[in-house]
Image (tube, rainbow, N blue to C red; front, side, top):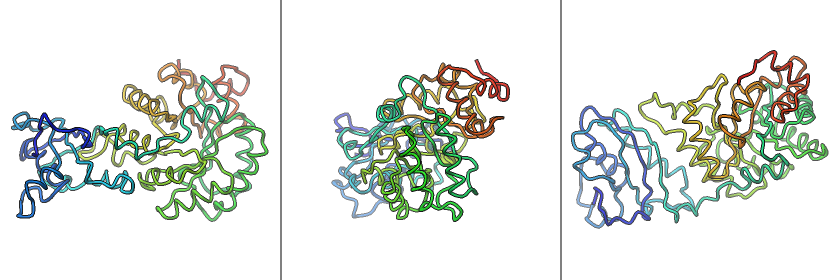
Length: 396
């Protein structure tokens, strides 16, 4: 039972959609090799251990009639992966991606293979917690309703000590930031180690009189990542920043710790596997879907109009997906005060306007740069805003 059967029980399969291209064969052969190779065995060689019952219960299913794929050289193919092949309480996202994006990349038949969509049966999604706070919780905590949040990124990325970092944070908070994110480069450098900076910043924020989310960068290999999440929480911090290079399964593992932390997913570097110009990869929308079900509260979704300028339609689709999952998108990489209202017009209010350069590079410094962003969001313009517009311009 390798090709689609109309009586198939879809509740027993995770259905993955691929864009496949082949020159040496056709989609019939390619989909067969993917389905066999990513479930029960060698894509081309059968053996006596592969019984009829084993095929029926454990092989992937090609969700098309065989004739629809014959002689076709490229196109979308849906493959059903049996849910019984995964221990959903422990294997999680890491093992799922090993199945979805694994051995087919080693087969010469495949000239291109991109994962473009995943459909989960509802009984599988119960194994993932989703956001602990999300859009609703973030808005409630910060008191910001019906407007984008004013986000700020620590600069310099690395090289300052804990005392100088505190000085930067003070200016951001006094300027009106709602969300502050350490850069993904920081993590645990000797000049500004976690054990020093986390209690220092947490104590200040607790006494500041403002509700600000501060995402501490904790990037590390898996064992240290979990330890750092616990340490950050114990020290009174309220947020963590994890770049995807720490492992996609890391978000799921930390969310299951149920710590009182806002979890931020940082995309920097994702194009290594999401760029559509690659022959093999995963669509960014799929990564966002996985991040959402794993339980991140915020995610660097992309940017429009900055030095990163994503396709408008694709970014809208990503933001819509995240909003549906109660995840707050952060738009960053060239955001500045003169862009804010144009971005609102294109994408609505549910995002963090996350800014680094245009805050710290303001003619009057970091505090004024934060004020300029706050004024751009609130439409209450003062000298800080006017100076920012004079430097970076205004986009209608």
